[in-house]
Length: 112
Image (tube, rainbow, N blue to C red; front, side, top):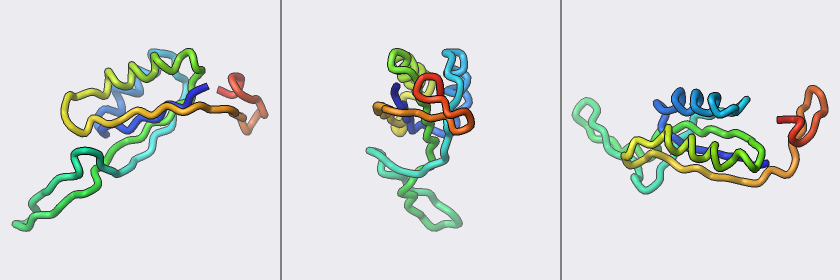
């Protein structure tokens, strides 16, 4: 099993969610996060004063899928969240060794 974690622009969330549902992904976790990468934030002018915005709002999506499905999930997230502009985000993939569904006690693939 793989944990696919993607940091994307906020306005792309609905598109990504819909595309993942079409692929057969049953559940995902979404968190509002702030951060920066190569863009290192930006400046804004408010009431005549310039302010540095060092941390930009993003969305973090986490989904655990069977290993054989991970490449398709990664491709769908990348394709649907890409704008071609700086700050599109990143995708991280990690191995998951165990999963337990708390309610039923099911484990591993049965718990997905």
